[in-house]
Structures are given as C-alpha cells and as structure tokens.
Length: 346
Image (tube, rainbow, N blue to C red; front, top):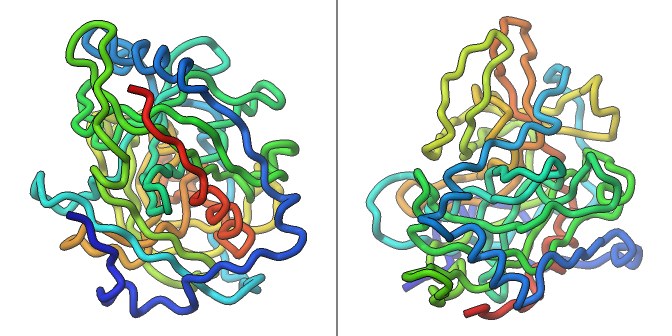
C-alpha cells in the first residue's frame, strides 16, 4: 500500500503550495517528443530483455557532456514564483534499507548505435508513470532535434536484474530552450513510461503494473533555498581526472552535501546549482537531488538533477555535481507531464 507523505516533517517544512499556476507563456515553453507507440514499445522491451537481458548488461555509461569547469559562488537567486512542492509517495517496505527504491537506470541507444545508460528517478504523478533524468539522457545533443532510441527505465537495477520490471518510455516533456537550443540551464526531462513488463519466456511480456505503484515516487519542489543540504542518488561509474575509478556503476550510490549557486565556463547559461559530491560524471548523469530526504520512508523532494560534474579545486577528483535551478518554469513542465496517461503494452 502506498501513501502520500503529507504528514511527514519533510512535507510540512517546505514552503509554498502544491498548486502549480501556469503562466500564459508557459505553453510555448514545453516540448513534447514521442518515444514509442505500443507496438514499438513491445519490440523495445524484447530488445532489452532478450537473452537474459544481455543488452542491459552490455550497456555502458553515457559519456556525453559529463564534465564542466566552474566554481561554487554566493550569488542570490530571484525566484520567478512562490516556492512550492508536491508530496512524495513512499516506496515498498521490502527490500529493507535506506536507499530509495524509486531510483534506477535509464537505458537507450546512443548516436553511436550502442547501448548506454544514465540514472533516472520515479516521480509522483497523476497516472503513476513519470521518470525524471537529465535532458541529454533523452535528447541526443550530438544529433540535432533527435531523441535517443529504445528508451527504457529499470528501477532498482543491479547486475542485469529488473526487480520491478522494465518500463518503456512513451513520450518526453522538456523545456523548449533545451530541446531546440541546448540551453543547459534547462537540461532536464520528464518521461512518461508504459506499465512495467518482465519476460518469463522468449517473446512473452507480462505486465507488472504502474511504476509508482511498484516502487514509490519522489515528490517535486521548486524555488527552494539555495543554501541547504541535498542527498544525491545515482550510479557513478566513470574515472576521475586523475584516472582513478572509485565507482563501478553496478550499485546505487548516495552522497550528501551542501548546495550553492555556481558559475560555469563551459556552459554559459543563466543559473546553475552545485552540490558537494564525489560522484564521477559517467553514469551519474540524471542523478536525483532529493531535498528533505527521509531515509525512514526513502522519500524526499526532487529539487535538482545532475547534468555534469566539476573538479573545482583542481586536485584531479570531481567534487561537485551540477544541476539547473528548479524554478517555476520547471514546475510547469513537470505538471504537464504528470497529466499524461500511458497504459500497458502487455
């Protein structure tokens, strides 16, 4: 049984309303991109699950736009709307632990024709079918105006297993400025996924139900303070600048650190946040930044998403994750994505 965490301290401590107002110009800021019809989704699921999920196991961490140069600074933020939030839904009681069951890997075919993965997170939504990740883990920034192929989400992924099934993406919601102009301060995407499936025998797909019903869903928050602590969850796998590889990408990792505003030399856009985190870039793209995370309920509020990492002190090790600032414009796109129905492919 799932329950919305409206009575937790994490819910009561957030400022603002759960009602999202839509500015008149907001509709023109949303890009909706189709990813797969039902028949195409069936073939995509078989592609990833065939031969003991060989293509999932053989996928490599996405290595596009993983590093930037920059520094954490103290620049005040002027919110475009009042702060607000949408409460999370707690995940299953099992397995025991403190890690969110809503986090997993998104898999896709890159512009090089090979299978790759980023990190993704299930979010609360009206139809329990929403995943958040970095925009360039959905849109192919190396090929203009194209989405990445065969896009799926596997929550709780570990070593080729699909403990709650595999969820094929139906459509993506993103900011117009990123999908058309690659403005990285809008480098985020929300993907509606079909019901999960498993394959008990070759060419057979069995329905496992809706995503958030199975794994819970993180809440969502916007225009929150930029001087708080943040918990980051992802699957880092790549090397540090000094060549060391502290992570394998096989297991979900957790880091906690303060956030601040950030200036970047490689991505000259409006406003970014930095979080103190040792995650390397490859694999951690799309990692969730959870505000007011409760390890007892394994739930919090998505308030950022890793789009790149930085070594701010030049010691050869990454120390900062980078995210767009989640303002009212992000909340409008989130709200639009929450109202899209998907259904089953099995």
